[in-house]
Amino acid sequence: MDRELQDYYENRFAMMGTKAWKDLLEDVEKMVTSLHNVSVIQDEKDLFFKKGELSILTWLQTLREVSEKAYEELNEKNI
Image (cartoon, rainbow, N blue to C red; front, side, top):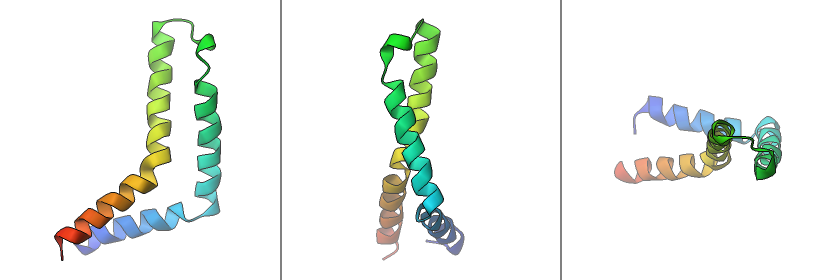
């Protein structure tokens, strides 16, 4: 893995180790919980908007795991 890519992942992991990241994920969890209330969806447009919101929030929730897996796979290729 080249140095620039390694720095990218190391900086990402450093960010994810902060209290601010933990606080963000707690807020994301609350937002996801609120999106599971389908009774507030008024029409198809609203449904698709909420689906998009949920997609982004899920991406944030899984970013660490996905990043760790990608980092490990890149390291295995360089061994």
